[in-house]
Image 1 (cartoon, rainbow, N blue to C red):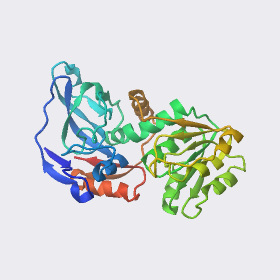
Image 2: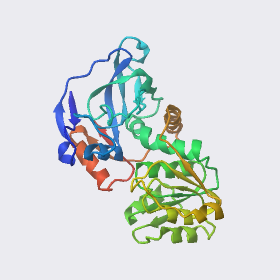
Image 3: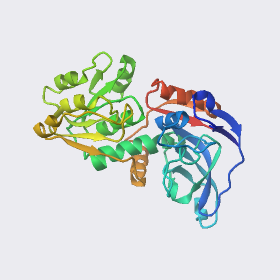
Length: 327
């Protein structure tokens, strides 16, 4: 089979098209013919290498995988054969597809049967492959952990990436007023088209908290989504209404952040962490798509041999929403 593989950390030149043996479905596994693979910023981290996350080489990246079960190993119900599925990205033993084990930038993958989630009727492979990591993460953060409600004002930092766009879509689906922070007028226009009520360009307005405070009628927002980290936390605190909630699921701009403790007690702000997703979040996302309540924002669709271009778009922050690679 064809596969995009890494044999060393580095730039996109390390992502090379190779020929691999088709894997075999061993005991407890299913063999999936990959129909679509969604890319995430995690694929950039895997490519570049992270000091605290060693990657065993060679490695096939890609954590969001949708396809058809073609065979099953011993101990797996044969009724799975022929069914369309999306894979839960986390291995039952720990770790993530494409990082701690081979991912979906290939034509076939053998996966633990406990990772199989059936795709309901009416959901395409492209849409299914857009959901697990970004939309699953957002669903858990906003609904399970954040408990967002209709009528609330929601601020989203980094709104034009995969997680940011999905947060916007879920917040609008819930009936919230959305303040979206992004880096360009073009991305702002796309966010507006998806339903964002207020666009804040943090390149033109580095002190984005002032723009948010003004746009909120000088009352602040009820919920802020900040998975950026770095130096954005104090400004985020300044955006909050009394009794507001700051939600976080990551720190793409740096793990160490300064906070102003005065805002915690003066505005009675809660900081709520959210650790990725569980299978129920992905099932809920699939149901939202099947019902027509949600349409994943897929901007770019590439053939397998152009997967490196997709990773480059993510690394250069040139993408809006999701990149889907099709073998």
